[in-house]
Length: 239
Length: 239
DNA sequence: CGAGGGGTTGATGGTTGTCAAGGGCTGTGG
DNA sequence: CCACAGCCCTTGACAACCATCAACCCCTCG
Image (cartoon, rainbow over all chains, first blue to last red; front, side, top):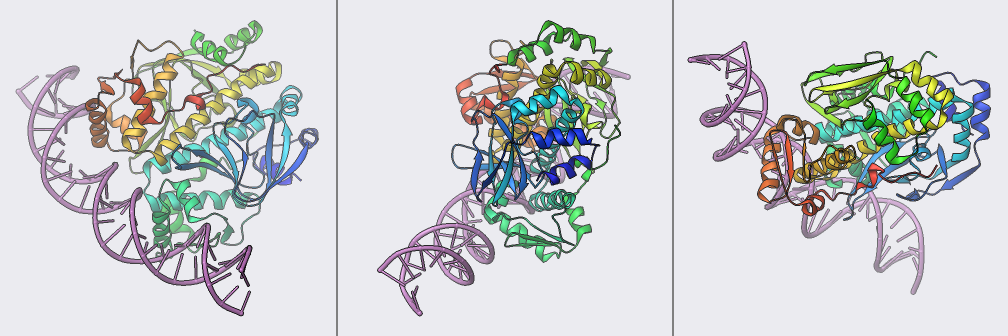
């Protein structure tokens, strides 16, 4: 059930059989959520965290006047709101962008893991620090890149993150979001998101239609994104 | 020496005398760094983390062509690069914006803390998740606010964070950065940072000169920033 | 005394937002 | 079966925000 999560942890560190048992045993139930539903609402007291089993979810902060800013996307295998374990409430919403299923892990069990399996706890801590690294990469995009650069960077990031859990085909992958949502991720209006996608298409770099991303020229995509994957910490750690 | 750090931890959770001893004992040495120096360079293998004792430091990501984006500021008492404990190398530079002093905490000692003091480990984990929350707030600013809103938000955040460690006067505080650097934090050119500061001054909201921030109208500052401090998790946790 | 860094100002242009309108598709109900 | 609403995508005209370039000032420091 949490195979994709374990796959992702093991891509970066060793997980012993005992640790795997502890993690699998920490799951209480599975939750399914339809697309466009808020899974966790900002401020709500949390007593469990969720691992995304399937679908695309996201962290989103809403401003008072309807403006929204997505701060991170989540793919299958991500411990979506592990940070609620220490924060106890979230400063943002967790939303399902497509139909999603989650494994719920009660915080009491996570507390036990920190007490009995310190190495596993450090691996989970790493996972939350990786989320922070992704936030930083988005800050750079939002602060320093123009529209086409921001969009190219997002498509690069998602390609690598989905590939890591086997959710890409040769040069395409599913990203079931509207152009409106794309704009809310990239700090631009839906109108400008549309025009930026047209630019990418006309330049023969990439196509995005109906929630399907098709990459035509990886090299130029990376180049327009100024993409450097080191922030995703893909290398293995030595224990 | 790390009194400000303990003050900050204790603002949010209980720290027992034994935990305090463990943390104080984990410090190996004190490092002093002059202003405008890189403290930790991106990619460099890390074997210790640093607590900022005095001064203003920052996380900064550099692009190839000289553009730069600051992703977070650090004030005295912050565990500046605690995330390098699990990441082993950083995806960004740590820089001293003013003269700074740091306490170096070897990762081996942090590992011991995770093994012998799981509650303290969770409190430190919380601290890295708080950094992520600050990143998210910056993403919202960079993605969804105009220049004056972004600048007001930064000055609000720094006021609260400095107040928490007793580094503000009635309505002013030190922020020893140039307008160039301000621009690199807020995703704008130094010229536009200058004009935005003039707007804030002309509206009687705030003055910034010579590294000194003087707030004239807190209410209007918060309003133009659309400031909601909940992302700073200032409330105490029950254990 | 000259160099250099930081701050300030003005003129101009480009990127992106805003507003408005229309097209295609899907689902639903008469 | 068709009418219609509603959502998403697309396009055009225009305006606002912010970047760029260039010049000048002030201060500090060698």
